[in-house]
Image (cartoon, rainbow, N blue to C red):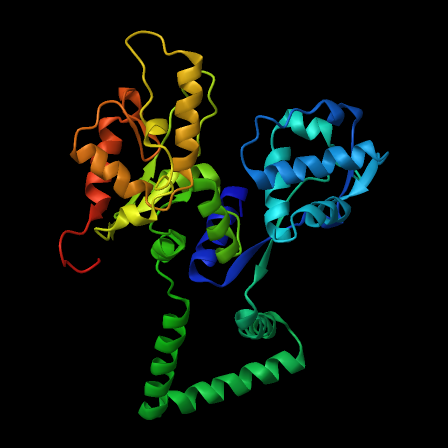
Length: 358
């Protein structure tokens, strides 16, 4: 069988739930910490968990370690972030080393040039005995010895008895349907089916949502494919933020369809703050750096607010033109593209009167 044919066959077995993929963890592998790690700039890394992994590498190199195991690296990460799972550490570390430039900073010690990063495919435990019996039957059918011939003769006699008994045939057919139902896993029965349970009403950072789903599924999901799938799901939206000037791009926010109570303003993070902070004074033309700093300060409060979405919806409904609302400065039209506006209008609602929450 060709490599492509083998890949297709394995994928079909995975879809049926008979085999599953086992990632080789980095714990048992050995890496070299190069001196160039000390010059690594982690200021551009946004995800706190990724920062923790890279900080551990830099700290271990500064302590004089030149050759170290993946387990030692993850132990150092766990000391700073005990809540992070080993699977998550392994995934972040492997993803970071996927860049050839990064892999050159932490090269792996290989036993030979033929040693490659790879994955194991294992049989799901509940099917191991069943498949073992099938292999045993295949062996007995193909061997040419007295024991195998006696087994085949007994099998022929048993088949005759089954063929002569309609009740026995009915029981076998019913049993085959039961087994088929156990392995007939729909192709769309994946992480997207129960995704809404991981999304709070205020939304969630896309990378954090990805981490939660990966931990729940117990398998790696490519982040780019994950984000592309999000944009095609009903009742789910992704607020993509463009980079503006020198400001750091806020993470994408994943939201779901939700109705907020009419009294949502009671939970606003800005409730006791000076309203003028969210009303920067800026005339036409280039924005003064002082105003930019005020806008960023206002946005930072919005990004941690539990009711930023109804605030944004209200601002869209009232045709806000100048202020910062829901983490968006409405003076900059590029911060409210039509696609995002339609998404907010479709997914975010505010209850009116005594209407029940949805």
